[in-house]
Length: 531
Image 1 (tube, rainbow, N blue to C red):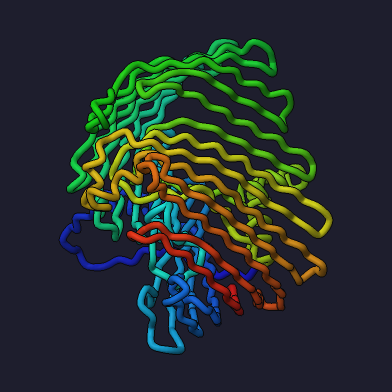
Image 2 (image 1 turned 60 degrees about the vertical axis):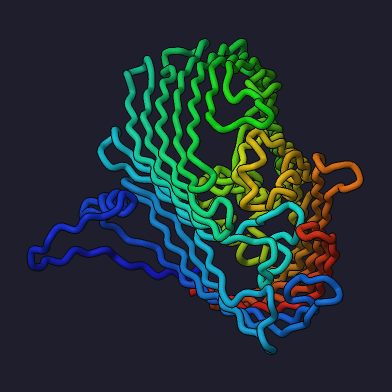
């Protein structure tokens, strides 16, 4: 991989008036101080996509329009890893041009940004975490999904977010470890309802040190205040005490107790605060396998969880079941997809023990073989309401001679906790109840076959089904979405690659008064250059 490096330099100049910077920029500036000067890795990219589609806007059969679409995608990736801070960032600008007059329900451009930062500001005392993202999210579970095609605007909203979290960390010898963290985050969307929200959070944690070998303990208190415009302000306070007893070298017993306090308006007068407890078991039969299970209760009812992982020489399995209180902005601040890179990283951990070298190998594999970086899981619809989220997901990766397979299956259920009126501005009084109780099931798979050293064949399959379980009898709301992609990628010298892909998309939308079906067939040719 060709790399271009630049070096940050400081130049003397005339005295200037002090400039007041916003908090995120001020903290970043501290990391750019002369002591942090170092080389940066800069990797520009350029992609050209030429597509033919018979339904550019994913419309119903009566309104489908064919188009030739040219797409130019300049991009830039930055990275820096050093003793003081680590930065990873990638940005792409998608520019679309149409052979005919631009169809309604299509876009001219799209931006994508992913950035993360970790820094050490003052010795082993003051640190900083940060992230920023720009990208599209699915607006509703009952319509076209964002991975169906890149041109259509139906059922999508642009989401911009950032998070800045300075924190103090201190070790009380071998007795305890303490952390005090302040988090400032913001979410901006193009959707009418939750258009903007700002959050301030404070978290204090104290956990046992190395001297506690058989009995471990931890105490955590957190408070978050969110200002969400028309949706109103909310505050959440959580207190938790946890204990861990190492029964044997492979088995540990766990217990938690605490209290949750939310101030949203509960649906039907349901409680929004109460005590919590859980008891569980951690089993680690080998360094390659682990199982954590817990049973408990919180103010909303049962609170159970399951986490398992297993790795062999050629396979990786991960499974999770969790129960949590969530809302739209919290899910926009975190990913809702299965990371192909994470699965492949675990898969290669035996053959490439060094983490940095393994990450480079995984990135090169994904890029050179046109493997999708993520596999879609359940889509979070845009909503201002708090909800009870039950998530089950199992993912696996298989490494066979010349073939790699990655699969994921999911089952997600969301039940509204806050009042339906909060979403009236977003969905209207008659449509808000569709989000009272929803269930999404589905899966995704990608198969990468490498018949020759520089040639790869990729097959991608996705399927999802969304049901509004709270719909009135005789008025059930349901939608299915599925896609098949078959591609051939050829690598050439000088970091140049050519890909040809066939795409077939089929789905249902229940966003309007009358449910509709749509299909799309497309042929896409992609030329990609990494400088």
